[in-house]
Image (cartoon, rainbow, N blue to C red; front, side, top):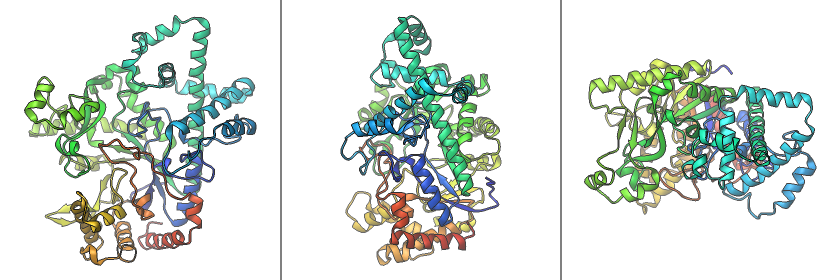
Length: 565
């Protein structure tokens, strides 16, 4: 894929779990993604932006994965002969015994879906172990050898999770398993039969990752053949309860919890407005990471580069400095009602602050900029020819965006947030090296803003109205929203304005493309809908819908008119 800012393109942001494939097993997978590639390529889109595809934990958040390297097994397409070790008989037997009503419903039922897919993969692994030919075994062996830097640590962690009730909370495991060194001694001292069982489970988890990397590389090739680039996502942080922290704790600051400073924009969450976003990610010990030439970060970038044509780094400003909390997220509720003095009493005088230093002096700002540039240059070195995008939203220091441009990293433009002297910045004034979009996975879809603004009855109605008015101004419309019709006036105008902008990439969130209201995530909250929402219709149904065909014909014409096809 020749991806250059000289050629403007457009794409769609879609969480993979949200897609409905022809015969999916309750969650979007790589087969559904291939259907989606076919559909959007015909419309004229040249890119699909995905959320992280790493293996998730109990909260199902793609940004809180239990491994920075391992792929989520639920993303795999499992069907007769996919993988080739999964027979018709095995598939039908497992599916026939899995009689759970509604597991293909509106939301992803992760516990059921993961259980089903694990059983199918276990059957495939049993067949592989018993019947695989020499070439297939050699390919598996080669994969394990190539991934030896992370795979054995991950499979041991993953097996220990099973031993401990599928919990990744390694600090609550029995003492003999609470560090990787002790766990290896524990494994070595087990009775032979028990040791054999553990080793076999490690082999199973290695097999799953081999199949995962196979399927994703094939999907990358499929996208290329259709002229569509896949854009991956690397979260800046990694979960406290991850194989990475378990295997290399000396490279993390476990006593602090990374996040973002107070952010008034998110009216849905009082804690975020008061204290900030506490993500629970451990901070990096950059000095120790630099001592081995950022080996872990290099492997992380290498892994995503093999599967995606370009990738986004979530919270890229974390490379420069990150906001740190002296408590873990599970204690957020204890701090919500207290003031600053009470908070300091509860934390022995430790307050949330920026690490490694704040931006209050010119010396600090220069040092932060220098650190961030040094680390990002290593990321770019490992990325090679793959383009890197930086998510530079929120409270951003004034040196970050200019520095990203120097490095050749495209930043984001949210039209309703781009203002100069109180006026919305026109799209034609955007830097070419940028990505323009109205919403990320964390934001309300435009249709939701519309309904909320017109209702004028919720706590956030005024904010939604203000956002919509800014979007309308960006699109050259009269900002009096109540006088507009969503379909006839607003939809086409805002899409045209986005596509006409000077940004290299214009991205439309799937819910905005389809003019839907539902959200994929509400930051700072724990609800049953976070990371579970699915599109109402399958990709095939969207293609067949007369209404959607008409809408996509309009989008195609706007893309052509803007020179993005």
